[in-house]
Image (cartoon, rainbow, N blue to C red; front, side, top):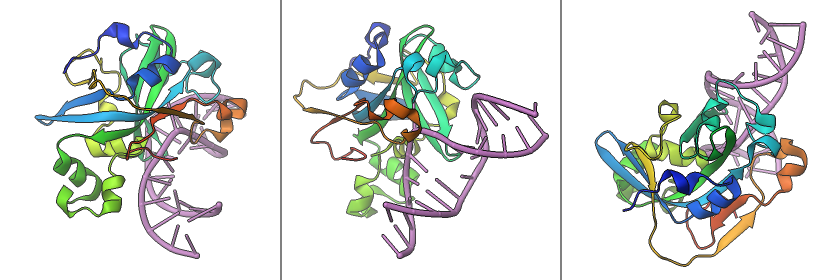
Length: 203
DNA sequence: CTCATGATTCGCT
DNA sequence: GCGAATCATGAGA
C-alpha cells in the first residue's frame, strides 16, 4: 500500500475528488488499522462556492483547518450529532475540500458493525450491511472518526490515503446533497461516485 | 449574550 | 415524503 504524498492533494477540489475515488482510506485507531475504499465524494470549492464553509474565504475557528496546506483532515460536527470527514485540497490558504460521503469497508468488519449497530457483522441484516458506511455521518461513526483528529496531516501515520488497485470503474457526476441553501451552486454536478458500488449514499 | 440553523440520519407514514 | 434529534457554530446585538 503506497501512501499518497502532499503533491497528490495540491489540486482543485474538483480534480482531487475524482482522483480520490477508488483510493484506500487508512485509519490507525485503538491499535487497529481500518482500511476502506472511497466510493463517493463531493467537491467544495471554497471562496466562490456558496455551499462551502469557506465561501468568500470565511475564516473562523472551525474553518481554520481548511486554510492549511492540502492533505489535512477537516472534521466537523453537523446537526449536533454527526461528524463529517473532508480532505483539504487546494493549497495553503486556498480553502477547498473534498467531503467523503461513502466508503466500502475492507477489514475490521466486526468493529465497524459494533460501532454502527452494536452487534457483530455476521448478525447484521442485509439492510444494515448496506447501511454500514454509505453516508458521510455513517462512515465516520463506523470508523470512529471524531473531531479529535481535525487538522491531522494525511501524510502522517494516524490517518492517510493509499493508492488503489488498478481497476476500471465508471464515475457518475450528480448534484451535491443537502445544500439547498446554496442558490445556483446547489445544481452544480460536484458529487462523484463509482457507478457499481454498493456503498453509495443515494442514486 | 441570544438565536437560527446545518456538507445528516433514522423511523414512521 | 416528512419530521425529530441535538448542539457547535456563526452572526448579530
